[in-house]
Every structure is written in C-alpha cells, then in structure tokens.
Image 1 (cartoon, rainbow, N blue to C red):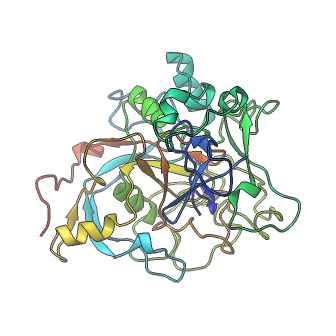
Image 2: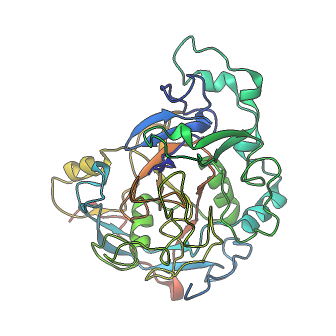
Length: 388
C-alpha cells in the first residue's frame, strides 16, 4: 500500500500535499494526503545482528560506520508478479554504480544525535504555514481552524471492526503533537526505543539528516538493487517463497481491525529484528516505509524505456527531471508494518509508493546512502554511459 493505507498510501507530511476528497474536508492538512496507485486522497484523522550506528560523519574511516558496500551492477527493475501494480512496469534493465547504504533504517538514537548537534526541528514539530499551503489548494478553499494547523502528524488508529478499506480515513488520525519524539502522539515517547526506526520525518527532514551525516538518500534504482540482495527477478527480498511472520514486520490478520501480531510487533520493530537479505541489509521489506531521492511519476519506467529506444540498459536513473515544485511527490520504498496481502503487498522490492515531500507518517522513515569509493578503493562506475 501506499504510505498511508495500503499500507496506507503515502500522505503528505505537512503543508503541501493536500488533495480534496470525499474522505475528508477539503482543507485537511497535506500531512494527511494519501497516495494509492498514483491517486492522492485526503484522510483524517534474526539470524544476524545489525551493526551499531555511530556518528556517521563523512570521511572518518574507509568503512562508514553502520553501512554496507553494494558493488555496482545490473539488474531487472520492476515487477510483473500477480501482486505487482501498473507503476512497476515495464520491466527494464538498469545499471547502478557501487554505493554505500545503511544496514538498517535510521534509528531514533541516530536521529537524536543529529538533533542534539544541530538543534534541528522537524516539519511535524512546526505549525502548518497556511499561506504556503493555500497555494496548493483550489482557490477559495477556506482557512481551517487554528487547531488544525497545530504541529502534528498522522497516526495509525485501528478501528474496532471491519471497515471499508477503500477509505484510509477510517484508520488514520491526524494527531496534534505527534512527531518523531512522540510517535503515537502526546503521552507516547521514544525512551527505551533508541533502536527503533525514526518516523514522522518528511523528505526535507531526511535530507537534512543525510547532509549532516555526510550522506544522501538512495535513488530508487539503488534502493531496489540493494533490496534484492543479489537475487535476480525474485518476487521478495528472500526469494519467491510467500511472506510469513518470520521474514518481515508486516500485518498478520485482517487489515486494519485485526492484528494477530504473530511476528511479535503491533507497530514498528527495533531495526534488525528480522533476517537480513543477501547483502546484509535489514528491514528492506516491511517495518517502515523509506524515502528515496527520486521524484515520482507513475509512468516513469515507461518513459525510461521509450527514451532508451525500447532496448539497452538504463544507467544510474534518478527519476523525473525539471524544476521542483511544492506538489512534487517523492518515491517511498519497502512497505511497512501495515502491509497485508489482503490489502496491499508493498513489502516486495519492486513495489513503489509516493507522497509529497512535506508528508510525515507514523510508519515512514528512511535509510541513508553514500557514494564510493568502496572497500580498498573499489569504484564501479558507469556515469559516462547512458545505454548500451
């Protein structure tokens, strides 16, 4: 699903991505916008242990703390299995340079070190700027009450009974005071949860952390290449075997009202709670959604193939170009603890979702990447190539 409900579709985490719909008032904050299969809607509302994080500063050591080197290579990007969506097609060959990527999602402890060092305030901790938000809404949209513009973020709030899964507003609740420090809203805390993934972070928040750490967000192609762990053309990061509660933190039971918690987790799990993939990366399936650097277009793969003349290898794709706008959506990958085959299967490595960059969510985080050289100066480069 998307960041918000299909796994939820992606909602916009702050001002900007509001889209009027029947699911919520037309002024519902962008943070609540949800994207499912390219359509925005508003909603209210292990076998190995991962390496410890460390400061993550650039240039300190040849092997960045907590990161794994992914040798450059070529793979088939996209999906065509029974669970795949249209935006995962067509399949196409892609080559990426070697790069470093975090072995786990960025944790609360790592993000706290960044905030302590810089005084950074996340978007979810700031009031909504109505002047900016109104530019993205239909003319004449009335200003919402001040209480609706208070700092906050959408929080997953499961219903007590079976509901229409076509309306994510039935399980997402806009919660004043929700933020990375208070994931479930006021009264909740991250104390004792330092190894849990940081959530309620927007694309800008993730980029700010990466800049401080001397890193960057991975491209969508890098993310999928890393997630596949060296497996070519498989449905899941572990192969073609179906998902079960031992493989990833997803939803067991009937979504969204019945959570059997067979995997031991009602919401996010500490990073590294499930077996790593073939590259030694944890939680590339489930747990929390992860931002990528690319802007999103549902037809991006078709555009790539057409530009390459229908054949050849696409080298280091970086998403749609052009000047950025406030309404731009950015790619999210990996699925989350809300993924369930009855509703969505976005834990697959080819699954794509997106939300506007100002979106923050209860199940949305990120992991960082970094350019080479790799171990012993290893660099695999195809930067000067486009197709072959």
